[in-house]
Length: 311
Image (tube, rainbow, N blue to C red; front, side):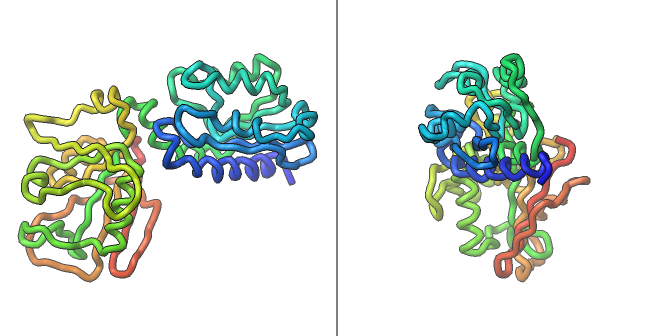
C-alpha cells in the first residue's frame, strides 16, 4: 500500500472518531486522532468528547498503553484538524505532540481559527517533526464546515430550509398546510438540535406561531430569532454571540432576501411528490449554480440538499 493510501486509511478513522463528538464538542470543532506505530498498528486513538475537556490528541496519547510508550518515537500521529498552538481551556496540543516525541504528524486540514491558522503546523516543524497537511482535506473541512465558516467569514453557517408541494407552493391558498410527513418532521427536529439558532420572518411568526423547538428528537432547542424591517439580521452580532450555525425557516420573502443577497451556504428543500394545490405562496426558485449533493426520499417526500458554490 502506498504512503498516500495508508495516510487516507488512518485519516478516515480520524473522521469516524471525530463524529462521535457531534453533540458535545460544540462550539469547538469535531476532531479525531489516531497514533500508528512504525509497524502499522494503531496504538492510540481519541476524539474531542466535550468542550472544555481534553482535545483529540490528548485523549489519543492517554490511550497509549505503558507497553507501547516505547513505540512513540517512530510513530505517526494522524489528526483531522490542525493541532492548537495556544492556551485556551486546555494547553496547546502542538506542545504536547512535541513532548511525546512522535516522528511524523499527518493533518487533515488547517484550522481557520485566528489563534491557530498555521501556527500549530509551524510549531511541529520547528521541533523537527515531519508534517504532512491536506490528507482528505475536503472531507475534513466538510465535517467542520460550520466551525470553519464561522471563523473564516465571521458569520454563522447559513442553511435555508423550506417545504413545498409537488407544484412548488409553500401553503394552500395562503393557509398553512401539512407538507412534511411525521418522519421528515422528525428529521427537521433532529436538524434543529444540531444547529445553534433558527430564524423566521415577522409574518411567519405572527401568522403560524411556530414554536421552532426540538420536540420530536432529543437535544437542545436552537436560539429563536425573528426579523423584519425594523429588526434586521445582524450577522456581526450573531458572530459576537458565538452563533456558528443558523437555520432560516422563514416564509418566501425572508428566504428570497437571503438568496438575493447570496447569504446562504446550504439549502434543504423538501418536496411532497404527491401533494398539489392550485394557489398560494410560491416557493423560492433555486439560485443559479446551486449544486445538489444529497437526494433522500422517504415515502412520498423527497429532501434535496444544495451547496452554494460561490462561498
